[in-house]
Image (cartoon, rainbow, N blue to C red; front, side, top):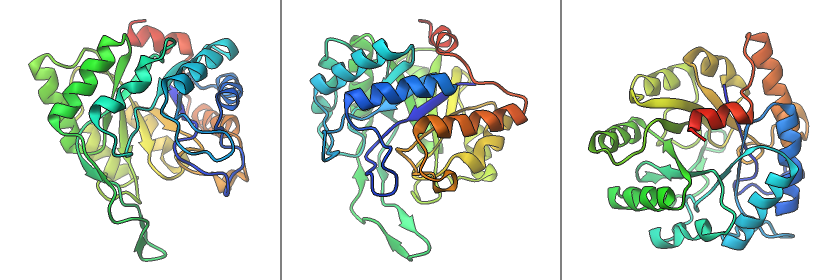
Length: 281
């Protein structure tokens, strides 16, 4: 099973100072994660000092270059998820001379308004993420044209039905590499429970090669067992949670904790070479 590290997303450093922001920090962190058992590293460009998003091709290219020098991780960038950027702008990072191996296509439009049940309040109430069918097709076409493999990011059963339609049209390349999103805080997704995951898995398209479970905005540790039972990989990291149950860990320390749990379940993580073989690289 493949381990993808969601290294930083839009996470700050108040809860955990180990979130990597700069290309140099991401590369150092990536090497430690691969040593701990990860195969894929997913990252957002961030500005030094402030951590503000940096979607520039220069930032992306420098990060991919440095990660490649530091380790053999499969590189997986963002294309500005949830930022409200126009679809033409979102492909901008792939203009970098040194490109990642994977880039995401979020399948559908969603409310991204996290709900805090303890506070009885939404973090925001205007978090609309728009991905029309035309936008999905535009991003998919641009990613493939750039020589990058698309990752199908499924936020709901509707996402999987959209993917199935694109496969039916011959628009999505086979085999499919994807992420299944669950969350207890983002209400548009299925809950991060065994039952929530089981409902999603029922609708996976037959053309699948590999799917990873992503627990958006929270720890993946309670869902390792259900993911293994479903035959899924795992996508997690400090971008989703500071992992206070582990203290203030680095991403590599979170990977090590997950690998330990996999060992108790009789599973081992895939290597970067094994992931590239599945991707056809």
